[in-house]
Image (cartoon, rainbow, N blue to C red; front, side):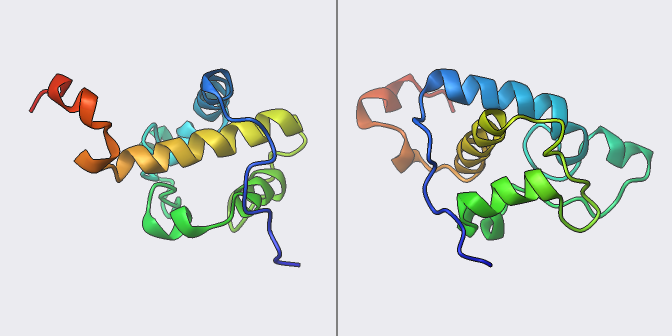
Length: 120
């Protein structure tokens, strides 16, 4: 059905996010781009209509829906389940959430103690 998992079923830590970033760069960035904008390398060669995964719509999707999309594909995206093991799919989803957050971050997302370190 459409009753997707809403919270990551794995512990999110820096190692998981780094693994997710590594796997994202291997499997996803070629189409979705490094920032998730949908303007990956293949868009330079005519692939159009790739989803921006850093947009508001995808931010509201449950994590299970992202996992399902990676596993089974969606639209023109082919299923990647056979190529990516389950733990790595969850790592990618965790990284996607961090990527989405980073693309839509505000100053309020930065801890007050670290705001002085920011450069304009």
